[in-house]
Length: 294
Image (cartoon, rainbow, N blue to C red; front, top):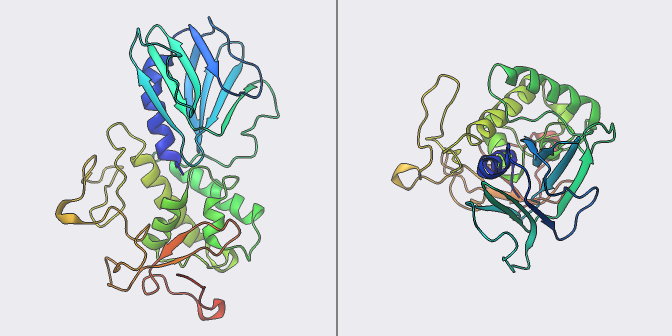
């Protein structure tokens, strides 16, 4: 599933052909809400968590969620707007600068920005921010985790809760838990605020980094890149020497890059999503037992 950084890369992709231009054509296979019309100005394109938002004049905004397999394609001026017969095509927007097409997106809807019942109203703060704003966003995420989640909830589920903080998906859930040394099935109530601070700070740092132009190639391993005044390594290319891109994600049964213990995987949790971890680097507390895993 696309994560917050992926959606920011989508914004960078579609903005040059949409932002600041008026619609010449608009087509959607299925849309909920008011349909944008030819002649409307695209005032801006923004992201909140996993949602791409296209703001038109007249207070109308279009929300697109890419779900598991959605993606965007753009073409330059003069391209045939509706010539694509791909059955996965969900949305087409044409301006004098080019065409933006969206495929396989399960959620395409519009809402009025003046409406207090926005579909984004319950979302937590967007973690794709740079320092020093990151400190405030992370502090807000910690407060929302304590208020909105039960103490017995697994931290793996809490990190995926977009009402706590928006942007984390399956990749960063597993990776930041490894980087901070927290077992994925630890209960929220067993973690200190310092541990939550480390988790959300690391997630925000990586999400922000890979949301930047040219940084779409996601790397979280030992040569992982740094930002905020630190050296940036291996951005936009594969890690040297065959180093895997990720510490634990999708490395089930492979040796841990730190201790060589086989990586484990579990589907436990409220959402039933796959989670990867190293049983040596992220030991389960004795009081919480050992989770079933493949």
